[in-house]
Amino acid sequence: SKESKNGMPSKYVPLKELGFPASLSLLVKNLLDCGWHEFRPDDVLSSLEVAASDLHLLLLDPDRFLFDKTAANATGTLDIKRNKLYGRETERSLITDVFCRVSSTGGSEVLFIEGFSGSGKSSLVRSVLSYIDVAGGYITQRKFDSISQERPTSVVISAFNGLCSVIRAKNSHRELSEIVIDLMAVFGTHLSALARLVPNVRLLIPELDEVCPDHEVRDAEINLGSVYFILQLFTRVVSSKSHPIMLFLDDLQWADSASLEVLQYIMSDPYVCIYIVGSYRTNEVQTDHPVFRLTKALEATNVHVTKVNLDGMGIDDVNHIISDALGIFPRICMPLSQLVLRKTKGNPLFVLECLRSLVDRDLLQYSVRARRWVWDTETIGAEDIADNVCELLTTKMTGLPGSTQFALKIASCFGTTLDSKVVKTLMSASPNYSNFEREMDKATNDGFLDKDHLTSSYRFVHDKVREAAYGLIQEDERNEVRDCVYSTSH
Image (cartoon, rainbow, N blue to C red):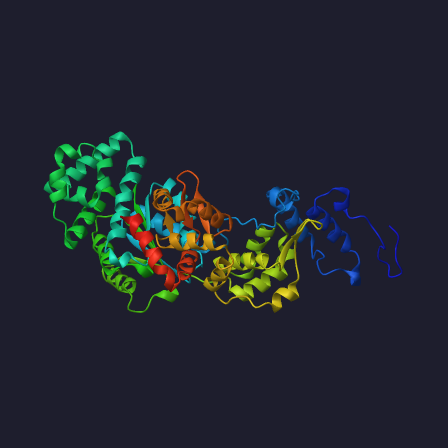
C-alpha cells in the first residue's frame, strides 16, 4: 500500500472484503495498527497477551466469535447463553464445600442465599446440582410463590413427595428393599399416615396397598404436629452420609411460618442428614420475617448456618455477558459494558433486559455490512433507560400485540409455570382462547417464556417477568381473568 504524507497507509484492502471473517479481519487490522505510534486508533491492541486472548476465543467458540452470521441467521437477535453462570466462582465453591461437609459428617446444615431480584440466586444453585447429584445427593427443589401462605406446608410436603422419585431412581433393587424394610419398621401403624401425606411413597413401597388399604390411607388423621413428626421420621430413614438430602427452597420471602417450622423440626433431629439451601430477595424481607426467626432457632440448636449475599456483578463479568451475547471481543465491547453496568448496577437479569431494550430501540443494531453489532456510545449514554427491571419489562410488554399481552396476563395467574393440560383446557373452554398456544409461542419467541418441547409446558424466564405480566391486568379485565382461571381450575 502507498503511504500518505502523515506516514500512514493511504489505502489497503480489509481482509473481510476478501472473504475472511470480520472478527479475524479486525484482529489483523488491530495488530497492524500497533505500529503507527501517535496515530494509533482507540481499539488497537494493548499487548500480545490481549491478542492471544482474542485468538483463544476464536478457537474456543468459533460459531460465536469466528464465523460471520449468514444472511439467513443475521436477524439481529442476541445470542444469549441462558444456562451459563457468569462469575460467582467463590459462591459456587461455598455451596459445594458445605455439601461435602454434610456428606462427610453425616450432620445437617443450612445455607441461605440473599440478594435482589434478578441477582442470579436460582441460577447459582442450579449450576452446582449436577455435581451434587454425581456425589450421591438426593436433590429435591421447590419454589414458594405469592399464594404459598394460603396453603401452609404445601411446598415443603411437595418437595418430599418429589424426593421419592429421586430415591427410586438412584438406588438398586436391593437398596430399595432395605429402605422399604426400614420405613415399615420405623412407621409401623403410622404407615398409612405417611402414604396420605407423601403419596409418592408408593414408588418405594409397591406393596403398600396390601399393607395399608385405601380406606386406611384416606381416614388417616393428619394435623400440623403429625406433618412435623412424619417428615422428620421419613428424613431420618432415607438420608445418610452416602446419600444426603439436598433440599433447595427458592423465594423464601413468600414462605409461610408453618413450612419453616417444619424445617426447624426436621433439622433438630441429630439422626438426619440433610442440606437445606434457601434463597430470598433481600429487598422483600423485613427484620421480623420468619426466615430470620428460623435462622436464630437453628443457631440456638447448634445447626450450622451459612449466608451468601449476591451483590451486583463487576465490570469483567458484565463485559463477559455482553461479549458472549454479541459475539464480539471483550476489549471491543468494554465501553458498552461500562454504560450498561452504570445503568443496571451489575444485576444479571437487568443487564440482559437492558441489552434487549437497546436492540428494541435500535440503539444496538446488527450491521450486515460490517458483519457485527454496532452502537453509538454517546447516544446510549444520553438515553433515559428505566431504573428497574420490572419497569423495563412492563414497557416492553405493552409494545406487544393485545392478544399476546392477554395470553401473558392469563399465564401469570397460574404462577411461574403453565402446564400443557391447562393450555389445552383453556383452548377448549372458549373460542376466545382458541389461539392461546400460538400467542404463548409468540411470547416465547420474544424472550418472556421458555417452552419445554417434551411436555409442551411454558415457564416464565424469571419471577419478575411473571410479576410484570400480572401487573398489566387492568381493573376492567379482572372479572374475565378471574372467571377464566376459575373455570380452568375447576
